[in-house]
Image 1 (cartoon, rainbow, N blue to C red):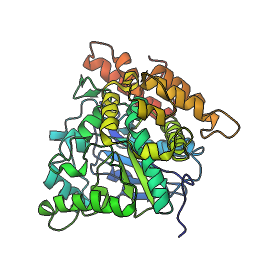
Image 2 (tube, one colour; image 1 turned 90 degrees about the horizontal axis):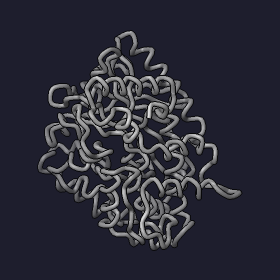
Image 3 (cartoon, helix red, strand yellow; image 1 turned 90 degrees about the vertical axis):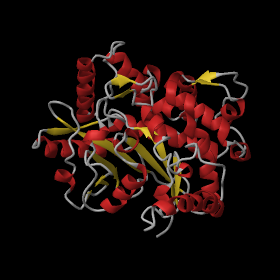
Image 4 (cartoon, rainbow, N blue to C red; image 1 turned 180 degrees about the vertical axis):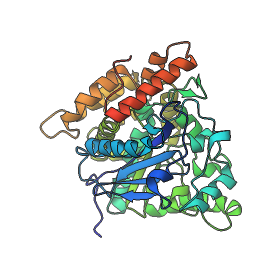
Length: 410
């Protein structure tokens, strides 16, 4: 099979929780849709199980050459799955964390195909926590054809990665309480492998740009650190790497993992389009020579990442070298919102834009109104009463069913 080159395809994965139609409590019944095999393949998309039984993943059936058809395709999948779940009094709900799920008592691990790997994770890390059983995200897989393309793509993704929560945070409430972080999912995610610190490290990948160096200094270290706890080698695989973007040499792609799932596929895929365009701009040296991006250390990127995780679009960004790599030379400071406004405008301009302007109809109101997490908090109100949280998330489930943006309530 011929490998795809840079930006010749997109692999998209969207995770949704299954909830009760009446109570919105999590319902661990993915198998009624997926069967014991945990997989259903359609012409353009596929459905699969995840670690826990209250989550279903929708994904492209192989790399998609264009993002444009995907919102409609995924929305049709959601209607199909909702129709099947309705017979069991259940439905799908978006956002990256269920707002009152109790992982200690409600977690049910997938019991069929691949369950031995999931139980290995449970034995080593303990998956009955929010960082494992209550986090729904979008993954973007971007291809590379050879070692040189891998190095270019990895450098570009590292630059864009810290700022993704300022665009896509959607998890402000955990166990019925606003946490103070707009992207609570990533607060849990960055700590979920703390028993083996090398697995996640600082979330931002280290500046390694050849497959050999990446294999030796990241993957082999993870395997060595995991081996005493995993004598059967069940986790000796690239997926054991839990950084915010991971090399998948088995599929010739890098997988971006730090994007919270939104209220509907239209929002998710528009965000995927903007993120991909931003990565392409860095990779093709639109603003600065690639070597400047390659030389960025983990520390400044990690600092900006933590700010965006907590403050979302209102995070203050001030690292001059990082901002220059994204077309902000000489900027003293900016915010996450201003950065994404700049990127959306700059990347959709000109005769050969990297971002198709059609996505601006979705992106402009999202960036202007703020992250979905901010919109949720505004709708819930300062008191964050249980009844109001229920109302807001019931409305969010309706937006997923109808494929519409959550804007008017704010």
